[in-house]
Image (tube, rainbow, N blue to C red; front, side, top):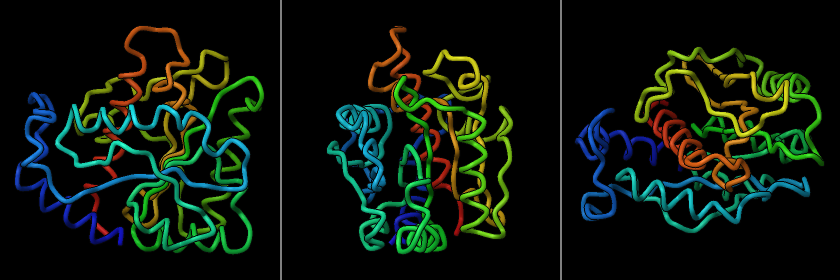
Amino acid sequence: MNEITRLRFLKWLLAGVVFAPGIAVLGRSLDNLRGDRVGWARLKTRSPIWMRHARSDPKLTQFFRDCTTLNIDSAWYAADVERLEEMCKYPLLFSQDIRPAQNGDARNNLVEYIRRGGFLLIDSCINPGSRGDANVFIAQHSSAFTEMLPEARVSLLPDNHELFHCYFKFPDGPPHTAVEPGWNNHGFYAVHSGLRLVGIISTSGLQCGWDNMKPLPGHDVICMRMLVNIYIYAMMQGG
C-alpha cells in the first residue's frame, strides 16, 4: 500500500541511495543500489483526454532512471478511479483534471486514497481545444479538494518551498509550457491535510513539456526535473 511504499522509500533515502541536492547522480550504472520498486500512474477517469500525452510517459520514467536512483518501471501505467485497489498500488497519481471524478465511487476512492497516504498531482493540459480559464481551473479544483476533505487547505506554494529545491533547483518556481496569458503566471497550489502535502494543483502543463509541445531546447528536461522534485518531496513526507 502507499504508506508501506513511502516507509521503504524513506529508509532507502536515509541510507544515502538518493543523493543530496548538488551532488552528481549516478544513473543506470548503479542499478544494483536501487531500492524497492516505486512508481506512479495516470488516473483514469471518464474524461476523453485522461491519457493525453501518455505517449511520452516512458520518456519521463526513463529520465527518472537515468538521472536518479529511483527504481521506476520504464512503462507507463494507469489506475482507474473506479478501482481503489488499482489506485493504492501507486504512491503518486497524475491527473489532468479530477473534476470528472467528483461523484459516487470515484469521489469516495479519491478520498480514501488520500487518507491512506496517497498524493495527487493535478497538472492541466493546455491545448486549444480545452484551454478554458486558468483561474476557473484552479478555483474548481480547490473546491473539489475542500469538498472531499473538509480539513484541506489550498494555498499558493512559495518559490522558496523545499519542493523547488529538494533535488533539482528551481529558484523561480515551476516552469511553464503555456505561453498564453493567464496560464503562465500561476505557481503551484498546495493542498494540505493536516501537516501533510497531499496534492498539487498546477497550470504549468508539465506533461505538455515532456511531450515536446514547447519548441524550446531543453524545456522537456526542465519539466521532467520538476516531476522528479514533486515525486521525491511527496515520498519524503511522513504519514
